[in-house]
Length: 311
Length: 154
Image 1: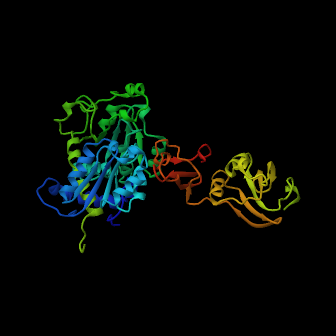
Image 2: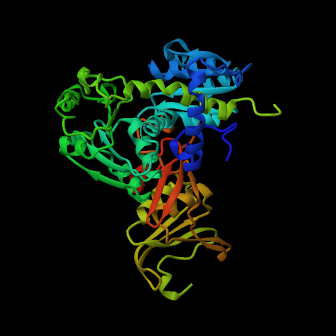
Image 3: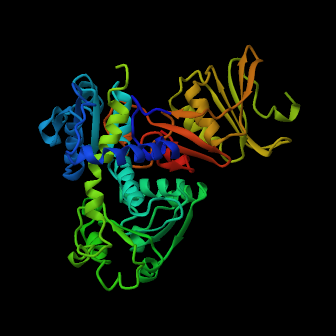
């Protein structure tokens, strides 16, 4: 099914075939993202960046993607300067924005905010992270990174390490990995384990999911080690945060027994979870992962909003 | 109506909610807002009544009131075996089982305090029925699943 004119709120909105079509399109976008080829796909199109929560990578890569496709952006980068401070609802803010733009990219601290935005807007809405909820474009670029590294997604053993409770990237990614038949291994602080409901959901999908409390053992069998940051902003209690912060760190000793092709990934920013010494190893894929954000988001914007033949 | 069910006097006009699983009548009273009804809406409750169909049951009769679809949906959630009869001039005019719709709007609050449906937005809570046995609801906004609705009835 065509993605043209559609919203992207949750990875669950996409079928396996649709994900594969995005990944194929993203691969073709790489020379455009690097400035070696020029696209006019979004010429005369305006994309609104509605960021109600801080973001560097996601917002800048979306802005870069729009501009590489010949479009332009209007941006809310700081919610405190909008009328929401005067009590305007998100619903009304989005309705207004949808009349100023051709598509809206939203990041917001409340779960479900992107779905509300999609209902309020008559233009396509792309979710760039809603609280601890979904972050589907991150998932797509994670998948693109794995596919580039291994040529396939099926049959990979992917270790998810860290904040599996609040980390929104993990929930979306685990769902997508389950669709592709990857084996999912969960590890990290028990207090930040994957919520039972998410685990149940994965098992319901027929996913191969297991827990491995020994990080070294988990890494030994892994094709991908997906590390997440413990998100301080999701903790109500500072002392609880301090208890788990720094409880895991990937360094040369953890990687000593790893497969030679192990890919270490991280949605970034990192806060000490991966030692700088890993950066120079062949395992370090996280900067490539960040770089792929632009072609993946270009591919999505092109599929959803780009000029079609006959337009 | 069989003689053994006449423990409560028949009503002239109103609604009879029968075959409520034993022990759930008080939840049903809460859903229909029994405490806030007009004073001509007499409410009769029978607890622990013998039933051929479900063993033991509760019955609630409310005079001069017909249930809104929203309240019927809420009853369907917590008492799926219930039947609802509309009585006019002592006669049963309509009798039907409660039926869980595909979507439940404005009946259950999302248990996720950070969900956008719990903020000051001009929207109602909305759940999709993603499983019927057991009943599991999924918030259309934050995708939180819910299988124990009683504490979250709006």
